Each structure stands twice: as structure tokens, then as C-alpha cells.
Image (cartoon, rainbow, N blue to C red; front, side, top):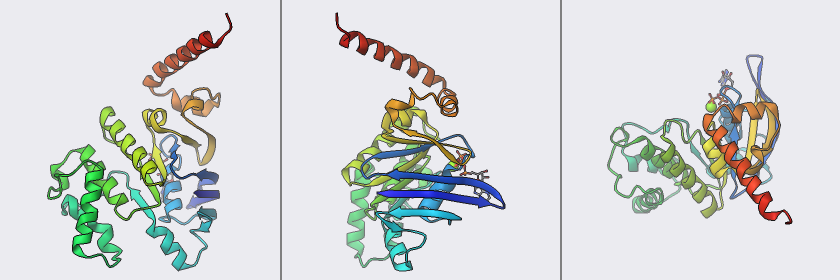
Length: 265
Ligand SMILES: Nc1ncnc2c1ncn2[C@@H]1O[C@H](COP(=O)(O)OP(=O)(O)OP(=O)(O)O)[C@@H](O)[C@H]1O
Ligand SMILES: [Mg+2]
């Protein structure tokens, strides 16, 4: 489990994170949502250690990433996989070289053959068995995300972070990527945190959803309770998407039907 407690972060006197606390559990798809510029990526960067919070605690199974001795912090980092916004693949490396990169960087004594086997297993897991020798410029956006996911899981992480995994993808491909992340989370018992704008993702895989607004956590709940929330800021965010209006209508109708079924005659 990852627990964050009262995280604060400012840049040049501007407070971006204003005291955020939350818990992210293993095998649960945890989503961080909120409008652009609200601090989602900064929060994610603080959690993984790419930015240092000004105050607060980030506990990985009880171990504080910020204050732990270097050795412990290194162990925690070793267990983190990250899918970066935009993919962050190396254009000059092939798919398999991209996926192998963390294995080479954190050289843990694996032989060349063992690395190749691990890379192939991860590529197969994301449905990319035949793309080893291709370059990023030769594959589609959805395939690039899959390569990013394969690279994020190549070290067998306990914790997986994905920043906007659906950006730039069409709705169908987005659902495939969401489902892949959800399956991997469950299958490998990973604690996963996904930052997204996408209400389809929320309604598809949002088992824990945290809504941020202007550096605060404004609401938390799940995909079932989000449509019933009367929090004004959340409401505005959720219903800024036309598709969500249709979703609300369907949701109300389902509830009406359910009540009809259960009400005594
Ligand atoms: N390194 C930095 N230096 C100064 N300001 C920063 C830095 N990183 C982020 N910010 C500011 O912090 C605020 C929150 O940025 P952040 O990238 O977390 O937003 P976000 O919620 O991820 O938005 P989006 O949905 O567009 O990705 C923005 O005003 C941004 O300009
Ligand atoms: Mg962002």
C-alpha cells in the first residue's frame, strides 16, 4: 500500500499542492482526476520521487520515500514502474531495446539471454509479440503505449504509475489500454496509480477515484458513487463531457428500473 500524508509543494512561492492525503491499495485501480493545471502530475512526480515535496510523508508499505536512508529509498525506487505522459520512448532504440532499458540501467546481474526472455515475456503480456525490431516511428500510438507499459513492468514492479496513459488515443484503443493496466494490476498484485482526464476511464476502471481541484483533494470515492456526488466542482468536471450526460441518463434509468424491480407490489 502507498499512503501519502499532507503533501505540500510550491514552485517560486506558488502553492501547487496544498496538503494532500490519500491511500492507494494493491490490486485496486486508483485514479487521480482533475482539470488541467490542478497539480496531478506534480503530485505523481512527488510520489515517485522525481520532485521533492516541501512537507508531508510518502509511505511505501510503511517506508517513507523522502526520509528513509538512501539504501531504503533505492529499494523502493527499484520497485516502481512508470508509464510517462507521452510515452517517453527512445526514438533511436528499437521496441525491445526500449523495454530492456531499465534492465540494462539497473544491472542486476542478469545474463543477456535472461534479459531477452524477460523482455519477450513483457512484450507478449502487452500483446506485442512481433514488434521487437521495430522503431517507435514505425508503430501506432496504441502500440507505443503498450511498449511503455511493457517497459514499466519489466522490473516486476510492486508499484505502477501511469500519467495520462490514454492521451492521444481513440476511445476504443483507450479502453484496451485501460483494461490492460487493470489486468496487470490485478494479476501481479501491483499498487497502481493512474492520472487521467478521461471520464471513460473513470467509469470503466475507477475502483478508487480521487478528484483534485487547485491543489486540494476535493473528493474521493469510486465509479459508482461519482455520478451521485453533489460536490459542485466535481459535478462540473464530470459533466463537462457530453458523453457523461448520456451516462447520467442511463444511470438514472438503471436506478429507476432497479427500484421498480425491488419495490413491493
Ligand atoms: N517544475 C515546475 N516549476 C514551476 N511550476 C511548475 C512546475 N511543474 C508544474 N508547475 C506548475 O504546477 C501547476 C500544476 O501542474 P501539473 O503539471 O501538475 O498539472 P496537471 O494537473 O498535471 O495538468 P494537465 O492535466 O494539463 O497535465 C501548473 O500551474 C504548473 O505550471
Ligand atoms: Mg499532467
